[in-house]
Amino acid sequence: MGFVVGLVIGLIVGLAIIVLFVRNENSRSKLRNELAATVAAFARMTVEDSRKILPEKFYPSWVVFSQHQKLTWLNQHLTKIWPYVNEAASDLIKASVEPVLEQYRPIVLASLKFSRFTLGTVAPQFTGVSIIEDEADSVTMELELQWDANSSIILDIKTYLGVSLPVQVKDIGFTGVFRLIFKPLVNELPCFGAVCFSLRKKKKMDFTLKVIGGDISTIPGLSDAIESTIRDAIEDSITWPVRKIIPILPGDYSDLELKPVGILEVKLVQARDLTNKDIIGKSDPYAVLYVRPLPDKTKKSKIINNDLNPIWNEHYEFIIEDVTTQHLVVRIYDDEGLQASELIGCAQVLLRDLEPGKVKDVWLNLVKDLEIQRDTKNRGQVHLELLYCPFGMENGFTNPFTSNFSMTSLEKVIKSGANGTDAIENEEAAINKKKEVIIRGVLVVTVISAEDLPIVDLMGKADPYVVLTLKKTEAKHKTRVVNDSLNPVWNQTFDFVVEDGLHDMLILEVWDHDTFGKDYMGRCILTLTRVILEGEYKDALPLEGAKSGKLNLHLKWMPQPIFRDS
Image (cartoon, rainbow, N blue to C red; front, side, top):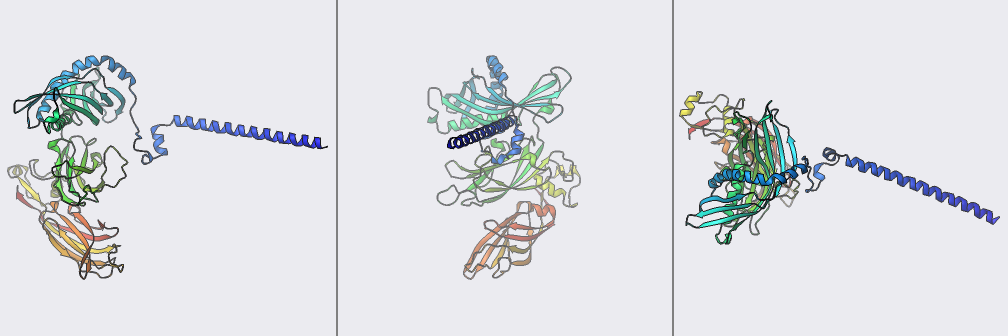
């Protein structure tokens, strides 16, 4: 009997083990199939699918989504024909670059020319290509290029002392994007009239300078001067929007040449919360602004000593050649006197994001490097007012004078909207007498109230009042003191006579009144651009330099434009 029971139990247990084993294998097989299907789905994913699943902000900084296709076949052919390309292109490049080198020649040198120029035996490698769809009568192609060259380039440098130095440019490493434009498209082979080529973007450009038979460091500053000259020459001769035109079919291709298309008006207002680069004291910040990084096209602000919240309120104008690709770059430095300035941070604005004829007020976060998009460290902010005015724009604010008039683009906007106050109606008369418009008037400021002011007293309250200052004229007004309140109401109105509205600004500082002094609570800084354009507005402005709080203001502008000989 016991044997039978044991046999039955053994059979049952054995069958149970078999059933569990089969079910486990079936489950594992199902999981493997699902995993294979998932892997296959990932293999079929496109870049757009990846961006839909996970936004770009969640990717690490080294992940880059490329729109370019591989060009292995082109690299193979280029390697074969490179000796012929080297021979043909070397003389062409030498002839086109040499005049630009002379243009940017350092003042310490008497001449700067090539004594030898060959591209070497190593062909560049194209790492990708993309087609840009823009105009209907052209084809635009962008080629990513990487080149570790063994070029033989020797510069013949002569100083004013009669010393001749042969300087070798070696160890060239370059990564960038070249742009080719085939335009116009025609119904005759090869189906396009001309080819434009340009260096669309420099990602990396390294090289070494060496005096043949000597040491370049024996002449202080020579290496830096020559390197700067070479980089400026490349920027001015071939970097986009500069382009070289090669006619393929007979015709007039002047419309392909580089031409200004508009003016960018920039007001550098201020910066705040800048990173302190000094061990003792505070940084001495100044700003460098450019659209094209050439010495004669770069603007530099004044230096504000010992201040991490500098106010500049300076105006600049930049000529724009291609609004779709160009951008404004702002770099904030800490002045170190005789030593090299230290970068605090930088920012950029894409010009295609600006609405023509509209003033854009922006605060830009500063980053360490414009190529690293996900820099989360707080380096401060810079405040700009931007206005892009295309040439020949048909609207209500076209320049009532000639282009020779000494007026900024912003002044032209304000001037044209001044409700019939144009003093000169005849354009020919304007040519004979050069004028500069001054936006003069009365600024009426009503300080309504404040909300959620920070606590500065030990008792948890404050006795706030506001000091209003017109920066340029230093005219001041002060509200009454409201006792024991973090949400004071003033409803006081003040008038300021403004002599030059476009170049002035209003500073409102909130203070806590104490019996034996006062405590700073925060401030608001306003340019007068908005109130001049809108005439009147009401707004709540957050306090700068405070953990909380905002000011409720009402501003009104009563214009009285005048003119002066410039």
